[in-house]
Image 1 (cartoon, helix red, strand yellow):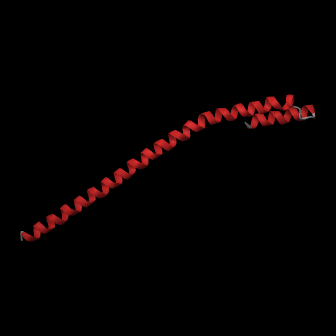
Image 2 (image 1 turned 180 degrees about the vertical axis):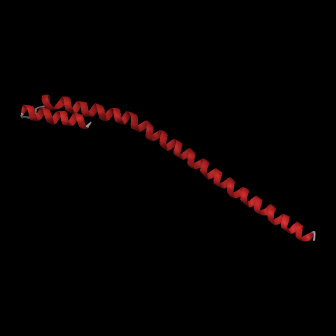
Image 3 (image 1 turned 90 degrees about the vertical axis):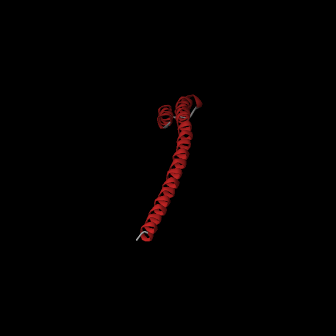
Length: 88
């Protein structure tokens, strides 16, 4: 994109005027580069957001499982201590 604009300004400098014929090729080059960039960037952003949502959902599930697991271990530990005290 930048190179196309530089090319357009260079042509203006060479010709000494800003006619459509001198500016159009450089601007066209810049627009083509911009379109190519958008063609690559838009699907990439969509894919990024899709996978980020999947990752966040997975992290939430793993954290919920971890909390539930630790609560179960704590309950088992508490129950085994009570059983040990009753058995004395």
